[in-house]
Figure 1 (cartoon, rainbow, N blue to C red):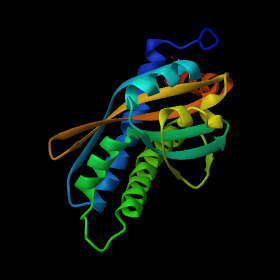
Figure 2 (figure 1 turned 90 degrees about the vertical axis):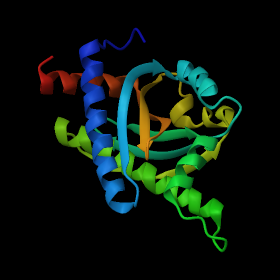
Figure 3 (figure 1 turned 180 degrees about the vertical axis):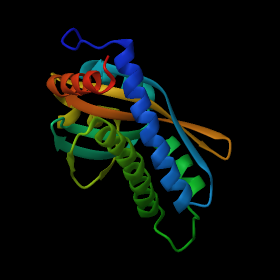
Figure 4 (figure 1 turned 135 degrees about the vertical axis):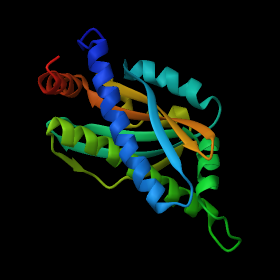
Length: 204
């Protein structure tokens, strides 16, 4: 972490960008779905990929992880992911979908979670893009369900010089709090470029 010079003011600015983004995502979800959804980001931090691997094991415990991954390229490149323990993701999806006997529930859950993740991640990345005047090219979002050990072997996670911008995310649905993580995987240079852009924009 000594390679990245980040202050509490930087983190607060990033948190605000994320909160604006998930707020936009919540607005889209509220329009699409029959239940009211509120989203907030109470905590943001930047950690090394090795520290993230340890946090992930605690996050998922012995369970698998369900995630939606959205790769982006531009002046700042990386991968954005919305992650939940699979059991928590299933609880979230159960609130959002009407389970019918004739439906392939595994496919329905995966498709629904991918759509929710895409909406939330696009809200966050769109907020960063619009407010900081950045342009991103996006790949097709990918649904991932695997255990923590295999998840951290993904190239975007496993690179020794990558860092993780980790934003704790709270979904509130009919007074049900469900916590997940939004993680932005970026190389040190990309995070430094993000910080410098924030400094210029907000005159920090």
